[in-house]
Image 1 (cartoon, rainbow, N blue to C red):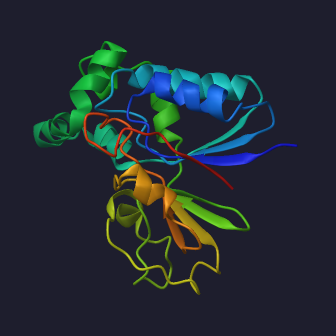
Image 2: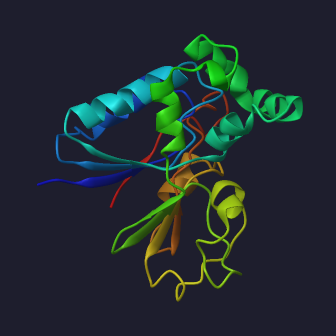
Length: 209
């Protein structure tokens, strides 16, 4: 029977993603995989992460790829020297090295198409999925695009979510905290996969929906 999983921030950790997908989840054709964004930066193989997601699609998995703030930083990096420097300060140098290019503009078109085709959020009957979170002070919680990429602090309004669980990443938390989230209106899946040198961090997390 097809299954659905949400997967947190990957940050260039291609081998960790591979092990999660095939050694832990035993991903099969027909499964649906919601990726919460931040595929790139800081880790060693951003290109490999995108290639792996492409291969999942070719194998018959349904993938829903959300946009993270790091993808937005990269796509904005050509606007000015300041935008480029901001991306580099946030780990963009590792992404450029992985792709073997000197700018986002130099990336092969199929990768740029992947990034520009990412969604800000996704909805199911039971869950709302987004990279960072939602601005619940707005009448329309999907109207604040910046919040969906960047927000850190928010209090869930379950009336506005229709009682659905909000699944997000963006703000790294220790694995113990991630696993302790039960019966909560929001679930954070970012266990700091790329920060393996920090005690309590360094895990890539999936949630079965």
